Image (cartoon, rainbow, N blue to C red; front, side, top):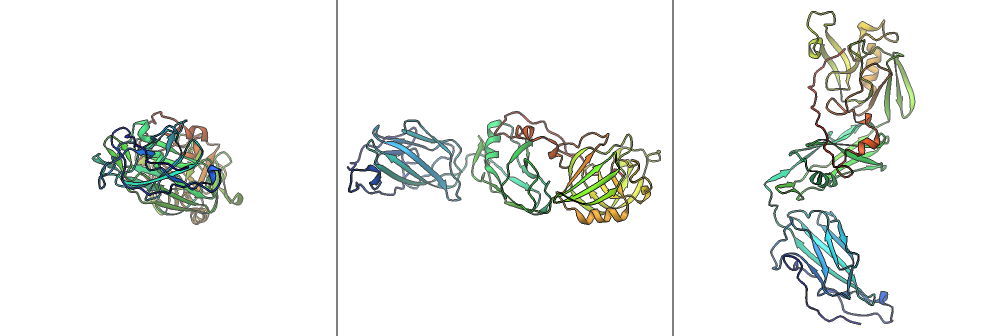
Length: 418
């Protein structure tokens, strides 16, 4: 069996992208169609694209492939650009039409491989290559991944800050599909839209100890909205250290530090007194400062009042931007292990604070239980991401829910409580 050329069908707006790879019209030596070498399906498959060589395809328009004869059907389409990004698409039930379901990238080179089958089951092939033109939008969306490349604890979320606000649910879905997070070993995770310009990514559970996390954007050249296109973003790689989790029981006035699920130290502490209770819940180490000057005026305590203070504090490990630390508090050693007398921080002896300071790193987990304080803020005052249960977290993804996420302002960075 062989196929003679047939008239080509024009689809939609413009005709065929010029760049064909010729096949061979031949049949196998037996009657089994699966044994046949693929026939040249050039004249049987139509693409929408520029008609003249040298012209470029409009990235605004979806890629569409159709058969020119009812006796032939499309069985598979693989469309990929020069950076290895595949284009998702849908094939009609009768195999007569395939169309892309996500945007093409602007200023990209694509190769499309189409597999066909005739009414006798013989396979056909066609390959076409084309370039897309410049974006028509005037704005480019840049993405800044965080934190910076380095080693972190198992509680460190990944952040993505956008240069332009993205409010439309469909546009959010385009952005989110383009932000790729992978880890070794692999874990289940999801993005959460904090507001119109920021997303956080975390796994269902903490990162595995000693994992490697890689973050990449596929948005370069991708149309997001009518006048908004993605641009190139610097990749991010994080190394995860030991699983270090510090649990403070505010009622028992003690902190137990675990490394890889083994208790390595129990420390007597004091936490926030009535009116200044320490926040409950999971916090993440934001940084470490050997010396911090802490003043009550930064959290609204009037100078000269009974609760006023102005202290030099050492071995301060920050867990909120508003000024909650784990730090040395030599003035309260007599209360540590017995009562809560601080203004919200977790205080301990200088030697214990120095040990804690040396033991933890950014991204390690500090969890407070049995405090009368409110729960740690989810966003805006550090990383309270882990206080959201997984089911609710996934509703913050544009791929599972189109609701608008309420914006929460970022708290001012101040050393505040002691």
